[in-house]
Length: 363
Image (cartoon, rainbow, N blue to C red):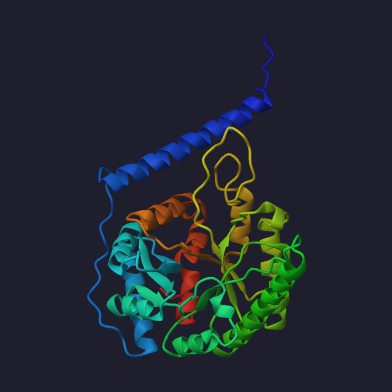
């Protein structure tokens, strides 16, 4: 009688890699067929033309009708919590790609407050305004007027502040005047952000934050959230670590701990697609995917356990046709579809609805 032997560990690992590559290839093939028009794509959800409502209650009622229309059509509606508009992002094209991607509503920001107002005015049932987001660190400039402008836009209907970009890395290798300038810049950013936290607490309006994971920045942010418990922060691109040396401990464990300690911290998951397999290993930037290319089981478990803190958002400025559609389609296939039905609904639209309507979604 022959004795059975288990396949070598290396063989098992390679089989896993090959299976993931096949899955990725099939997903990409499906996407290619979809964009080429060779695969069946659900048509846009029928929505009645709408005029811009004059009141907040009217706006909320209109947004509710949009989400309900998607649900009635048998589509899982997505509320995209962050899209950047620019002159390279025509609102009409964005709406068309939202229809194809199954995105019911998108929260939009731009460097221009007028561009936001114009887009929301033309598409009142689909676009939700955030405040304008000055480029770079202009939002923190003393006397720059961002705080006053943000307050006015909130009073006019914006549901969020920003996005604003924080960069608190100390520049450890700087010396002399460059080091002094960096320290001054960090001090300026901190003072401006603390003022925004006070505005957030006063108006019950979250701050949309862009900040690369970095030791000094994350530690300071947590202390500020503790000092301003009535303020809230929506930190984008969760799961993305562009420079691993800046915060080696960043990962699902750290974000789980942060959300447990700081109930006023919320996270928009990165929608970066999984990285292609490489011959030579290198640090992964998108930690949502394991080295083989699949959705990390550890991240999935953490997201479902702390689902109240997570949101969906493209966090991008779509400048090319189908760029937005591709990003959302991949995210839906790889992340949303991998979750339990209850978590999927929370991440797709129900958590976002709490911020838009300041109330729990009721069917």
